[in-house]
Image (cartoon, rainbow, N blue to C red):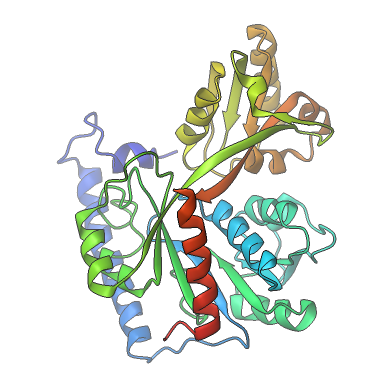
Length: 368
């Protein structure tokens, strides 16, 4: 498996003039040409976007990898529920194996699909959003219409859709990881950028995620935000508590203080999970990072369990996103504890400002 992060992060072990780098750079030029042409066709309305009969909020990013879209979708949907809206979440369902055009992950009352069928992120969203339908499918216009006609949704939250311009949106939120907002600054496959930086002008709001302390904004991002009058909000992922994998018990985060932990995860930013455990006071004896969306097998779990027992750790820890991929291993889940997190704006005063921004845009229309 290619270690893309090592290549993108300009690891010194890889020569700056290697054939691999030259090939990736050439391919990124071709990729840029395709992306620019596609965006030009949409901008000139030679390819049209379809408007749904209710407002659409897109939560997306301009880089590949984890910027915190799933926690943002959950936070946003809860905020809309509290304001009296009936939101529904639609997603492409990355990682799901279903060949169906429409997949009802949750009807708002009951979860109907597992992670292998629906994808781990849609299932996690469904678990944490009671009362909110979650639907996946390749064509979001179709899934959006199902959400409206079948479930009575009056606002659609579209997960990972900044590049999905076929569906018209009323609010475009773009998330940037505050540690590396633009990756290495290069387009795929030479870097993490999905689109040229100039395309940030399409967004209505930028959210800096994992914003610890003072956030140093990219000068280029700041220039675009100021020129286009795009508001910038800061957020962080806060650990709430820990829950047993089988769902039988939940305890406060303070129980981790001074306790030994064996941890594992298969997420895009494993270091963020490790950092949260350390800040909670846990002593990490082992940390196993698997590829994002990794499908664990019996051998993996046996190795993790053996390591946990050999080191005599107090807790075997993983993320909520990983736990939804372990439903086929109920006995293993009994031994696992999940670190549950929540996304919040920071400082706390910014939370109210963000809510006002969203609700005002929904009432007045994105074009006003």
